[in-house]
Image (cartoon, rainbow, N blue to C red; front, side, top):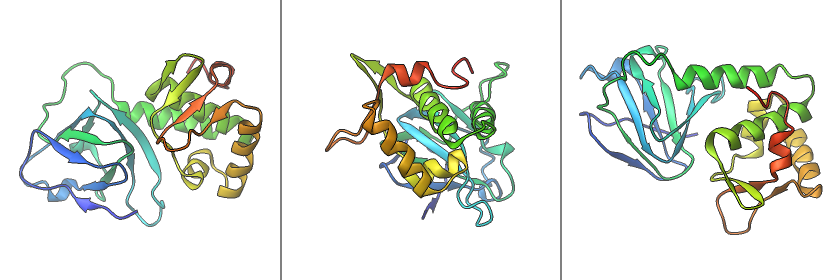
Length: 199
């Protein structure tokens, strides 16, 4: 996925349209910036390295922070999954001990260790809805979509297998992709019965 470098100097509000990405390169941040904070929207944090093929590390939403002084030497990219507004001049919240990137990485690793691709997909969809979605009437809404290729990367399977599994869930009327909308709807029963639901 193409990306651009995060602009200097530090700014209190940057905007990205859905699908745009920026590189957070700690070596290029001569201004000493150490923290980015999401103000609105949802973002995916991923590795830009060719070797890892855009491996997803985390998802961030409003209020989440990303410590740029703790990135690997290659940096990471921030991709807007929905229209995104963030600041690059945030002060790290001291003493709260919670790091959303580490938490997401742990949850995604737990999912990757489930026995079957079907279990991994089920757990991933439920995790995304619980953390980034909301209950809306008879459905749970997720405000963005991921490609089948990206879902395959997250659950450790191919795009073809992912498409087959998603088709099965749609035929069971547990997942709806509304025409003309950017999100998904999932049946609450799908979310509630997922492996690792308590995690």
